[in-house]
Length: 151
Image (cartoon, rainbow, N blue to C red; front, side, top):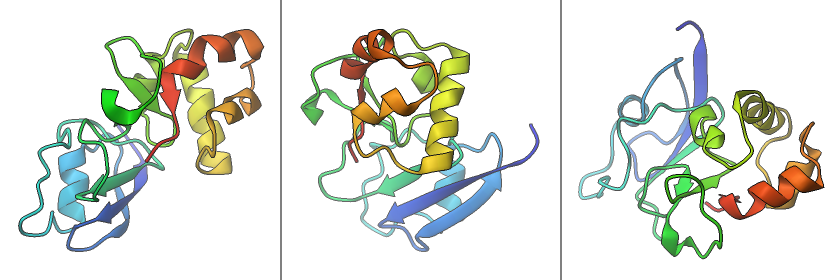
C-alpha cells in the first residue's frame, strides 16, 4: 500500500490529536503514535487489529463510549437495525469494509460514502446519507436501520 491516512486520536492517550500514519495502519499503530493509553485506561474494547480509515476519529477511554470495535456501535447503542454480522455501523468512523457490510452497499457505494465524509466532515444525521450520490429513497430505506452517527 502507498500513501497515508490521517486520523484523530482522542481521549485518554499521552498525545491526543491528529496523527498521520502509513495507509494500511491498524488501531494499535494509531494508539502507539498517540503515545499509548494513559496508565489505568482500559483499552480492551478497542479492536487493536482493525485497519484505520482516513478521516476517522479513534476515541480511547472516554466515558460513555461504546466498548465494541471503534467505529461500530454495539447492541446497547439504542439503534433499531442491524447490519450483516449483527452490528450497526457508525457512518462517521466506518471503514470501507465495514460500510460494505451494510445492506445494499457494495464497494463503489461504500467509497462514495467515504468520499462524502471526506468532503463534508462528520454526518450530523443518518438522513444525510441521501446527499451521497446514488442513495435514493429505496436504498436509504434499506440502509437506515443498519447505520448510526453515534460517538
